[in-house]
Image (cartoon, rainbow, N blue to C red; front, side, top):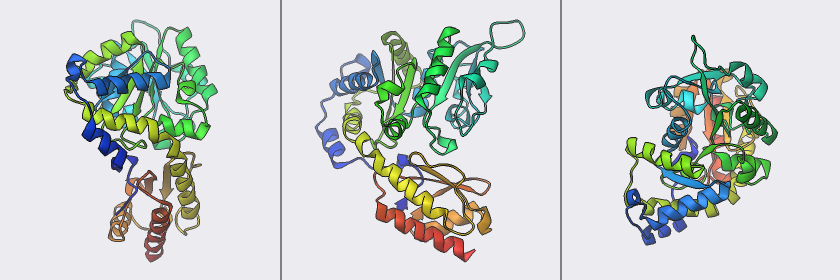
Length: 342
């Protein structure tokens, strides 16, 4: 199967499997797993932060990132279609006791000018703002990338008001690749950053949360409360170290494949691509084919291609290290056949 459903479906590379097999381990709850410790130090170093925390998933990392900066009864300002509000089981409400304050951005991109009117001070009738959460790249906007001057302005404006800013950077290395800038430079002003090892970087499990030493010390306790006190986790962290060192430099291939697929999709009658493809995510609308997204997916599966429908007549594909240019060409041909069949 050519699996374009997500970049979460990647398999660990041979180097990752070797590192996992040879990993030196200990009990991470006691801070005694040397491989986990190395991963956390390396992640913090790459992002120019004081400390890092290895967590089981991006949702866990975002949940903790919200919790460490907020109190029950506060609001979290976030983009209206962002992952933290749409796909994390309302964890900011369930775990942090906070209300999401959605603000619609242009192509998923918020600006300080859009955010500022929604900042609420303490008062007798409303919940005060406790945090701003930004997503870069923005998944549901098609992998769009924040210009650094915009995120810097958001952080500067928030900090002037005494507010923290958390970055859902699940695919921040894709953003850095697109911008041709180090991740430390484009995330420097964020108070905490979560990024995934198990998406475009192809590690089998895990995400990271980085921030100040004090913040990460408190985050470790919230990880425990979420059931994330892993023991000999160095077996997993070993793959994460390989992911950090080896995989970011090849993300440009995924971006090139995504742009190739978008260009080819736009040439198929009945299909259009509603956004500029910047990274590894491509949305395409099949409304003109007269086929439902469920049927379209099923017919593609019969042809050896896995792509998920989202909503209405829109579908999403993601390129990754386990999909070659030849695979992309085969997938396009399958899509062309299904669209032509009507």
